[in-house]
Image (spheres, one colour):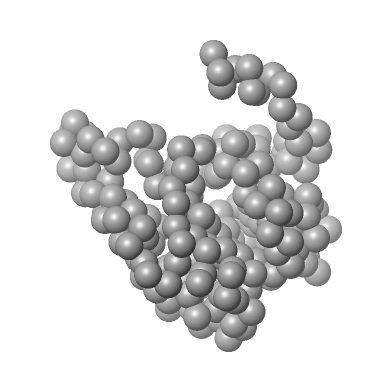
Length: 206
């Protein structure tokens, strides 16, 4: 009931580009950040006055395009799937955002990002690599910068992995829980996990 009320009262993105991307993601069955999650992320960018964003996991370009459409950030985004990355590039070009979104086709585990002045890092890629991503790209973040991680509750299954029948999914959920425990205990960051979307964390670099 509360979710329905919030969906009705909150203003949504009234934009043809957004509608097209949502339709594309649905038709291709490509997972993207939830509506609640992307609104939360965009509000964080505005509150934090972030200007430069590093995104790990481009998919079809949905989150990077929306960040660029509704804030004034410039974005470097990394996607390892070449086919999906090429689709993201088309979407970015169609949205006239090629001058503000730089997409790198590479495995983020191996990618080298020389810049060390990002205001915000958004991680939404292979869940099993979250610890590596967090460790690897911390050096690219300014002091008082933010690292935002998505999908940390995995549809509410993260606290009851023993109820999951699929062995592969159960192992993935356990890895997400391992990352959550790791995240909260990082002494160089002030972190908190929120029950927003499918679970989003905010980590502030000390």
